[in-house]
Length: 619
Image 1 (cartoon, helix red, strand yellow):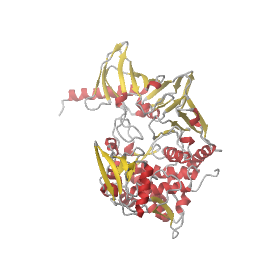
Image 2 (cartoon, rainbow, N blue to C red):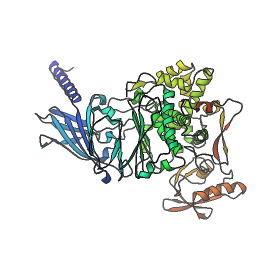
Image 3 (cartoon, helix red, strand yellow):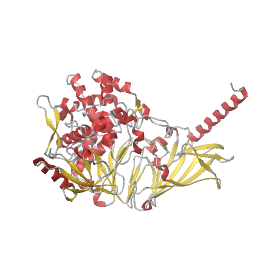
């Protein structure tokens, strides 16, 4: 037992530390990002932090919202220096956590100046003509203070002539200098900026909509910003359909932030009042541009309700160093992956055929295309998400990856059909979304939920053994994909030699579903399905195919070989390179080309197409 005097000293130290933290939380931290050297892939950062004398710990954000893992790009933070009153303040990195820095603040010092650079990795978020700025990459913050309690005053210096888009409220703009209004750290991190020499904004607010919506685009060329009137209409319809689906909005306004470049990473990242989406430079000029927009932007838009506003409690942490528990990602991402394509179809960005082909591709990829289902249940793909960054070299068919997206799509489609069935057609997935994601618009806020609360909400719409249903699906190790929703909706998955009429999100060449290979145009095998004819012939991930039946490899020749093998007893012969060695692999396959499709089951009503009919009045 501690002596009373020692306990009193410890208690006093704790009180003083809390008081110091409260003081830090009250005064704004200033962060200025100089992006004028973007073309050199360098951001210069100046930070001014109010401090008190004594020990100070600063964090660099580690667990990034929406990325579901401890992948803050700490290695890109360079040139770190601290000063106060013209004197250098030494710092030391924590021995157990490389995202943590310790300092000792001298007496009389009230403000700490930090300066450092952030290196934009090649193929990351910057090119000669544009920048996507995620604030978590360029901030430090005091330890032990919730992000919502810290206020930041952010400033941005842009290259001359560049324009920008962001959901951040603007304070003032003068030339290339932009100042934003004071904002909490959690909302700053939730509010990226896109900027570039070639910039365009388009109003997407539907008639009668009270809240402003727009798309802000930057590109590596001016012509790449040429969004067609059809896609503009589809995006406006997407906004209208989201209002019908959820019955509420939880933001002040909304910005679709779209970067078009072949030199940045291509992905989408959700934010409450915006999304950071990246596509190839000419994506809007492609005949399949509507499919691309609907596949990416609709998903990220849905996250404003599902993932940002309604968020699993275990994925809601007070600051970015605290680990997240990812077991409910099948709700966070899976439900979003279902609702996004549904809204894309309702809005006209996708045709019904495109929606059908996308579902068929998912079902095919998760059935015979994912033997890892036999040992690893869906729930574990969510729980194991933080370790996914260590995966290298393919093999995702056997070890599985982010299947809580795709399988979540099928899972929630089945939920939608069960709601319809159990309510006698009186309720739909829309009713659940309006109850679960509804409520007053107080601007961006978080309303957490648990598994039990999710089940309770579903039972309020259509009583059913939802807990048992989810436990069964989440823990299943069946080799077959969960296609109950497709079948309940009046359709079934089949394979034929006919290529898809339209390119679905996961429709691919027939070699995936025939011989069991995913091969790039360079011949490199990205995956070989374990147990498939190609795998049994000795081919696996990362090998390179250089020859097909005695000729130099092309994807077309491989497809031709698969088709012609159906009418002959001769095997398909592939010459592959394994490390520095050649190997000839003989594939005994004679089933011809196989592509997945959805076909109608006339014995059941077509509820699947009923779900994707437009709901908003104006289309």
